[in-house]
Amino acid sequence: MNLLKYLFFFSLILSSFHCFAQQKMLLLNGKEIEIKSYTVGEPYISYTKANTKHTKTKTIEKYDVFSITKEDGTEDLIYKADTLTFSVEEARNYIRGEQAAMKYYHKPANKWAAAAVGVSSSILSFYSLPLPMLYGVVIGRFNPKQMQIPADVTIVGSSTEEFRYGYNKKARNLKIQQSLKWGYIGLGVGLAGLIVYGVTNH
Image (cartoon, rainbow, N blue to C red; front, side):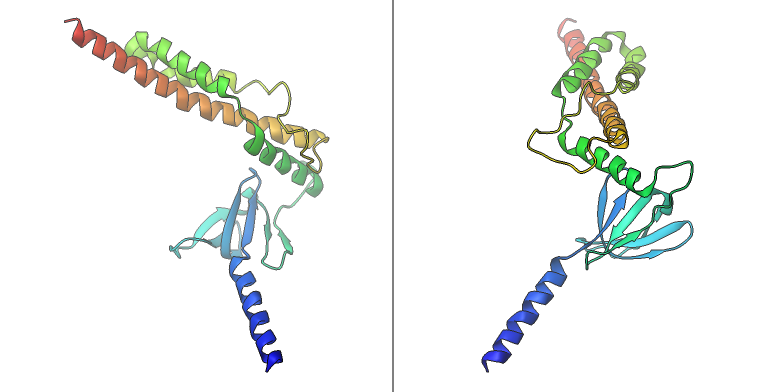
């Protein structure tokens, strides 16, 4: 009887683990997508996302995917290295750099500077629309002076050139996104202020 109890609880543990274990699709841009199932085709991968009520099949180009980690922990490597691209291990380090930037790169000063540019450019009215975008493109051309990784955090491959390349590229993209968002927020605030000022003074 006790043996049956143990077997019952053991089966529950296994089934619970199966429910929580998810397959993960790792993209070359550093993002991860939890998926239920997938099929590798040419040139697309068809998949269904996990943790959603929608069962619609989505597709993604194989060239955007690095690998898929299955429920049992094994890896289905999608990335194909050639003489013009990173090796598999170099690509891993590049992705680790992107992920480190997504997690640790935070520069509030970028947001405030972009917002200030947006507010300041609002005095040009209609002609101010391209200015926040221009500022975002210009600021995104510069790499961070140093990688923002906590001293107590150790990341495999962080000393490699490809890791730094991935980190810098993702950090530049983040700066552009933040600058565009806050630049146009500042522009909107500035234009609204000018409209209110014009109304109250007439």
